[in-house]
Amino acid sequence: MITRNTTIEDLVEDYPKSVKYLADKGIRCIKCGEPIWGTLEEACLEKNFTQEQIDKAVQELNDIHNGTSTDEPSDNAKKITIKKIK
Image 1 (cartoon, helix red, strand yellow):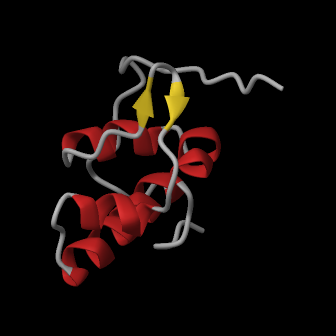
Image 2 (spheres, rainbow, N blue to C red; image 1 turned 135 degrees about the vertical axis):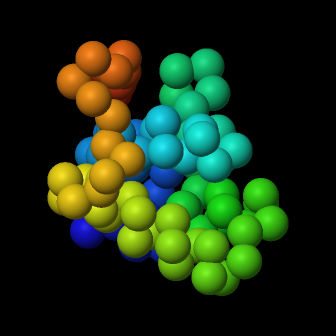
């Protein structure tokens, strides 16, 4: 489950559909192929989201992940593969 405290790194790795959603909201979550550090809440606050907007974003991201969103990308959407280098 995605929460305010979910890190951007975890969103990119575990919930790849969140990358497009966040980009559409003006939140950049990947720079030079690496996830931006911090939490979802911190990223939203940097973009001056209100507490209500953060709650809505968390809910919408969970809806996308659970397949209950009407805004989910089609199968023809470009997919991003993130590979963690160890």
